[in-house]
Image (tube, rainbow, N blue to C red; front, side, top):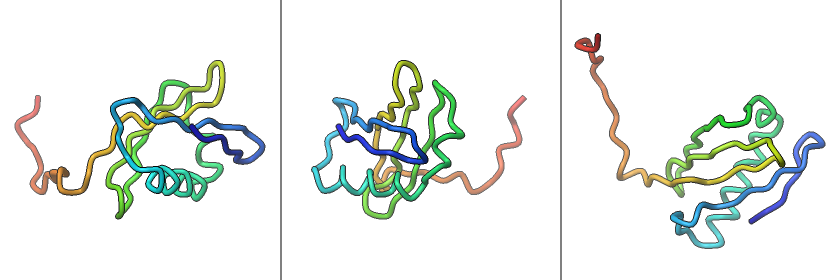
Length: 93
């Protein structure tokens, strides 16, 4: 768990128990969040967002604002597990 401040708001970054990454990677996640900066204030309680990093992959964050400002890394998807839909899906109704 990490504590950090952005734009006068004190946040907690925590990692879900099913997310297994090294301490160095956790630090990289924190540094990436600091680059987002005040954009974190745009997310409401219950929102989620994804950050893509070259080193770690797609990082899924869950946002809590009650009772504290908490970001939880709920999952990490390495790049080799990304599947990109190139053609449009037209059969959805």
